[in-house]
Length: 379
Image (cartoon, rainbow, N blue to C red):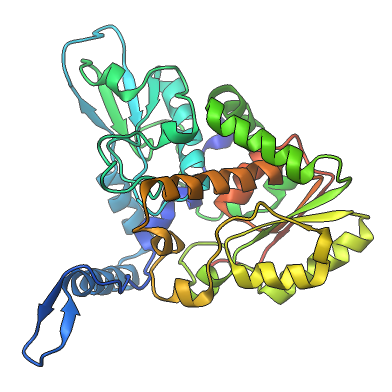
């Protein structure tokens, strides 16, 4: 029984039920109101939804919100046909289109544990679950998971689409592996440093066994390593979360250090621990420029797409800044994210705030010579 995994990933799958960010203002459909101003109908409805959600978060106790969330996302047993009557499959879906790659990977690992316990054959199904990595024209046509990864057990959704016994899950509810009893468990940084319950070890095992990059992605990641990190000596990996957290303060996420605080820590560690280069993973162009001014040619990065505070301020989530582009652009955004995580996992040290991406990089890694995660509380 995987006792160590009981509560670790609570934070990762909890954010959507308590997040109260301001909805996007981008205009899609307009209507002329009596005062003669054009208003975005979608925007108005989104603002109403935001107000209802904010009121719900303020008035309903957390334990009730958790219970409602788990009821809504309760596993669904469905019969899609009569094939494979002797097998039980589980279709793993993400429950929020804003989930980033790190959150999706962690959700998948958690549900792979669930599948093993229940004796199910897992299929990651981002064909019937909308994500930020494929646009709406591809939703229901492409499995966005397969843009980047192989299926854990070689089956895809088409293989099980006519099967007799299928469980559809997002949260893995109903399992005796109960991941959801302590909100703050994941926030105890000792679990990164000492891993007393074997949580990280267990997740590393599942990652190595089941999460496999497809050939195209593996070629890109290996190429980035050769070009950016190889033969650079001792490298400190840094995760910088900026404008999205500073402006939106997403509820139940870890507080990100101000850029100046992050830079000071990295400067101190760089000298004290004898690092040769800094590898910076950030979508924030202001953080990037701050580090570039300081470390100059000692700063490494993948040259990814970045956004400004002004970009983020107009939207609810960082993911929304990128929505509306072509499908291949979204694919590239996901590929850049994976490359950053992969290269972080290859660094000699890691420093930053606790994010889904940081946890995945930690799971990917063979261990670090130096580790520091900011413990500034939660929003």
